[in-house]
Amino acid sequence: MQKPDLKNRLAHLTKWIILPAAILVIVAWLIIAPPGLLGKADAIGYAVCHRIDARSFHIDGRQMPLCVRCSGTFTAAAVGVIFQAILSGRRAGFPTRKVIIVLGIFALAFALDGANSYLALIKEVTPGRLDQIPNLYSPQHWLRLLTGSGMGLGMAAAVFPIFNQTIWKAPDLRPALAGWRQLGVLVGIMLLLDLAILSEQPFILYPIAFISTAGVITLLTMIFSMLWVMLMQQENSCETLRCAWLPLLAGFTIALLMILGIDLARLSLTGTWGAFPLGHP
Image (cartoon, rainbow, N blue to C red):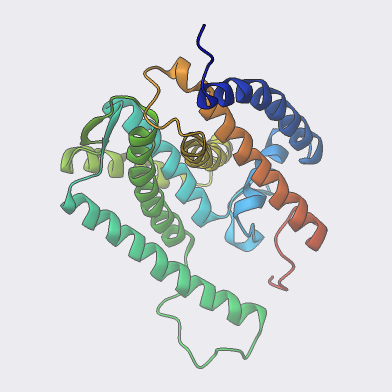
């Protein structure tokens, strides 16, 4: 009987390592994260967002897990991934050049508004510093949300086809975001969502708190799943979701481990689950 090669033995061994590792990481994170569902969402946002109170929406006085900009970014990322998964399946092609240009404009708007907002923050925290540099305009929540949403759509449009190119044995090379119609529908969905979010109604913000943090986990899981299959030299080896459970679980475990590590490092430095102590109002 022919012995399995090193690659197959390594793949078999990882099956027995990943599952207990995932359980350990999940348990550790659940213990360390603040109590309650929103507390767990806070712990995810804490790893990727400044969580400045004045730059966040609130649910009945309670700060959202992510700031306004990050809420838009990761809500849009989650919506973008789900949208492509439903309509495009295993399509692995990048958007057309015209769509990429639009997404690039979204990214530039994100960078411009972020820089303008950051300049205003520096002026708030350190009065007199950089006063000689004028802001282009007064930062507004609605601009943070819209530009964040545009960036999130771009992230989803980039990560989704790369994931399909890496995981599936026979990816469909047609564009995952097919053209103007799909882009228009996706942008329309996010505009409606953003309008709903800007109402700041608790019954809207509460699910957004979990959708946005799920967007963080989803993107990180997809990225680390791709890195995992490349490390294991198992690219383009899966034909079904059942086959993909191991790299997805590995990606999720690494993502949660990274979040846990950042949480612990930040908590040890600041002593709070809130924003960095910048002296802002």
